[in-house]
Amino acid sequence: MSPPKLPPEDKDEVFVGVCFAVKFDKMDIGKFSSCEGFGLEVVMEQREEGGNNGLIWQLPTRMKYSNIKLTRPIGPDSEKLTKWIVKALNGLKPTTGEIKAMDAGGKPVLTCQLEGVGPVRWSGPSLNLDSPKVFTETLEIAHHGFTPEKGNPNG
Image (cartoon, rainbow, N blue to C red):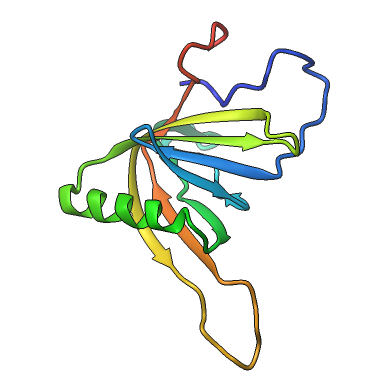
């Protein structure tokens, strides 16, 4: 399993993502303004060796992936998201996903392929006339891990 790939143009360049294009099962869900939670944890098992009081062995057992939260203003793409959630919940079958971090010019700077994607939580806007705000929606997804970008010769 490889980490997400950066474009090969300039490895020293600093990239700034301004939006995140999301697809589930190759279905375009639209762009999100916030994407947080990419991460993994290696679960370690501790083993004490008899007669060796100065050492506890730390053995890797499995990897756990953090849930990813995607947030954006409510808009025309919200209907696409709702359709995907309904489809996913009706089948309860994990799907594939792709999240692309895009720069200000719309060029992808980072692509992550996800396996075993499923919806965990969706939350819509708080409707309150006392404090007008942009209506946002947040989708939280679980997944089984990252894979290299398909077709990437470095992956």
